[in-house]
Image 1 (tube, one colour):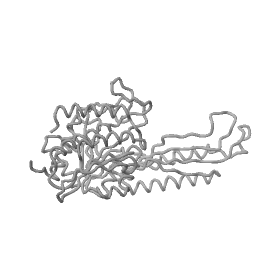
Image 2 (cartoon, one colour; image 1 turned 180 degrees about the horizontal axis):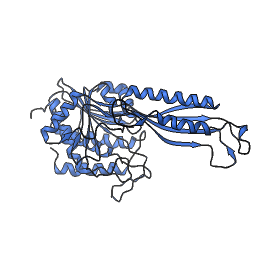
Image 3 (cartoon, rainbow, N blue to C red; image 1 turned 30 degrees about the vertical axis):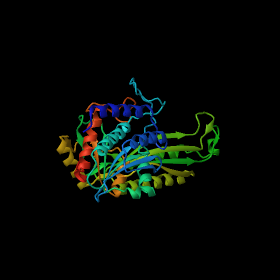
Image 4 (spheres, rainbow, N blue to C red; image 1 turned 135 degrees about the vertical axis):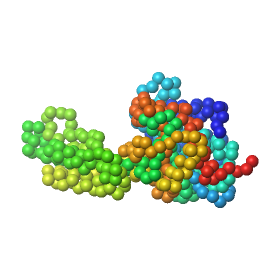
Length: 385
């Protein structure tokens, strides 16, 4: 188990990460901080620049057995933090407001335990992935040729989820996080003087038609297999002036579905309807995809392993408040491994994720470490002294 000295050091480490947030694609400094901390644990191998700034530490027993991966995320959010804490963000407009600093620290705590008490068989991989917040990181890691050398048989992740009692885990077999994708639609016509709008081609009517048509593709409702939701997140037309009839408009929408196949169908439907409306109004149209998240699906065997581990150490768990509408790119690791995501509660009334006043509770660090360590021991055992 972690010692009091471990907890003091890990808490200080987490708070230092919190002071220096780096958003998706910019995590070089965070990755180097993690790499330096891993060196002290003397893993068999440290792999860097995985899928961008990803870092993986491999603890190889040298005995044939499963490869078990535990994942954390390197990136922060482009949100200004509101906090009086001594460890608040020092970077204006950016903050660790999703708890990834805590998730990284839990993996380092696990690394300390594996270093002191090696597993008996197989390999443990501590995976610090980049760019989770925009959905690109896990795909880039898995596609990296270097990942093939450490590809896991099992993959586990913990994400803190406010609204759940402190230390309580929600998990289930099957869908955990929905698939989602951002789509931007740009409509282009022709500018005219505001006194002669007929001389131009304005996107105003098309924009007014596209927005409700998009929203009608998914209206929410129960989170079952038929769940669909479209949220228009941004719309802008022309310039902020009274003298010009506009030529351009842009609409941002987030499309969300329970699974990947219906998600792809929604994207096709969205682009078709926007193209048809643009054609009707004599406008050019172009599309761009953003923040593509696969559905996160828990494997039955991996979920059973996690539940047994939590039972062994007295961590309560249930299927409460699952699945979730929010997306998570951990699901990509489940394409090639038996994977399970665990949602760890920081408190029922705790500040919500992605809020400017959120901060990861340090008291969760030993809880997460204990869960991961028990899973590692159940799958790979412990070498005799």
